[in-house]
Amino acid sequence: MSIIHPVHHGRSIALHGISKVWEQTRALDNVDITIPAGSFTALLGPSGCGKSTLLRIIAGLEQATEGKVHIGDEDVTHRSPDKRYLSMVFQSYALFPHLDVAENIIFGLRTRKEPKRTRGEKLLAVAELMGLEKLLGRKPAELSGGQQQRVALARAVIAERSICLMDEPLSNLDAKLRHEMRLELRALQQKLGFTMVYVTHDQAEAITMADQVVLLNEGKVEQVDSPRALYDKPSTLFAARFIGTPPMSLFDASALGALGQNLQSRSSSTLLVGLRPEAINLAEDGALKATISSVEFLGADTMLDCLIADETITVRASGRSDFTPGTPITLSFASEDLALFDKVTGARIKKPQNPVEALQP
Image (cartoon, rainbow, N blue to C red; front, side, top):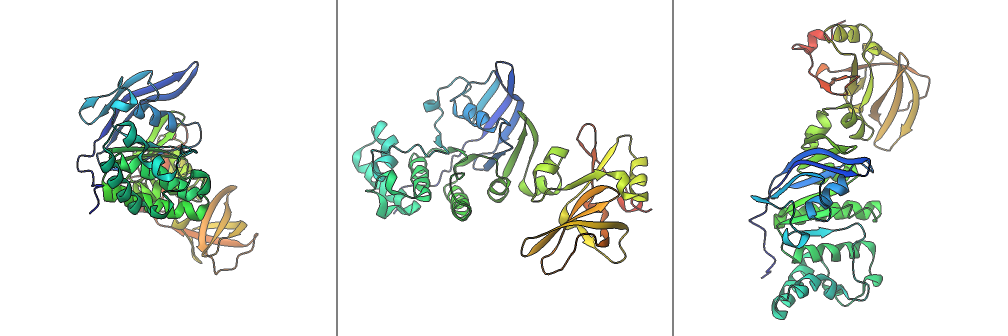
C-alpha cells in the first residue's frame, strides 16, 4: 500500500499589500490575493509582469518591500524558506547531474535525516505514482525532458508538503508533451490535495489546469477569477486582450452604427465594445455589414478578419467553409455576448438594464 498520502491539511495562502521595489522599478504594486487551501492557482501574465517575483516572495526566496505573507493562520513574512514547509519545482528542474534518479528524488529526505527504511518505502511509492520505476538508476543526462520533469515532480511529492510552488515547469517541453504533463499534473494535484501555485505565461496552461487564475500586468492584479469567468467576463481591456486565442475583438462603439450610438448615448464614458470571435455569426440578414480582409484556415475552424467601418473584428467560422478576402458579408451577434469597456480607464462597464432594447437601431 502506498505511503504517499493525500494531504488533508492543505494550507491557504494570503498576500496582503505586497509590493516589491528594485531601485526605481516597482516590480509588484500592492498585491492582495487569497489562495484557498487545496486549490490550484495559476499566476498568469506576460514576461516581466511580476509573477515569478511573487512566487519567490511566497517561497521566502525574496523579501517583499511592503506587505505580509500568511500561510494558514501564521504570518511567515520574515520566515526562512525551510520554515515555510513547502516544496518548489523550477523551470530548470534543478536536478543534481552526479546523482541518479533515486538519489535526486530522496535528496531532501536524506538531508532531513529521515530513516533509510522510510526513505526506501516512500521512494518506491512515488516512483510508482510518477511512472519512474525503471529509471531509478539513471543519471539526469540519460533522461528525456519529460522524464526529468517527472523526477523534479517526484522530489516535490515525496516531501509531502501541503503547498507546492511551480515556476514555468513545462516551458522546456514540446507542445505534445506539455499537453500530456498538464493532464498528469492536474490529476496529481487533485489526487494528493496539496495547494498548488503555478507560474506561467501560457494562458492554455492556466485555463486548462487552474481553479483560480490571478492575471498580473506590470506588477498589479488585473483580475482574479475562475478560468471560465476570466474568459466570459474579462474585467479590463488588458484581460480581454490577453485571454483567448484569438483574443476578444475590441473596437469603437461607432463601428456599430446606430447600435453603437444608442449604447454610447447611455454612457458617460467613451466606449469600446468587445466580442469573442465565436459570438459573431455569419448571417444573410445580419445587422452589420462587413468585408473579409484576411482568412486563416486552422482545420476545424477558419478565422476571418473582417472590416467594419475601418475597425477589424475576428470571426470564428467553420473550417469547411470557403472564404475569399474582399468578399462582402453581414454579421450578427446576441446582445448578451457584447462587452463594454471604458476606453480611457480600461475598466469594464455594466451594460444597460435592458441590453436588447439598447441594441435596437
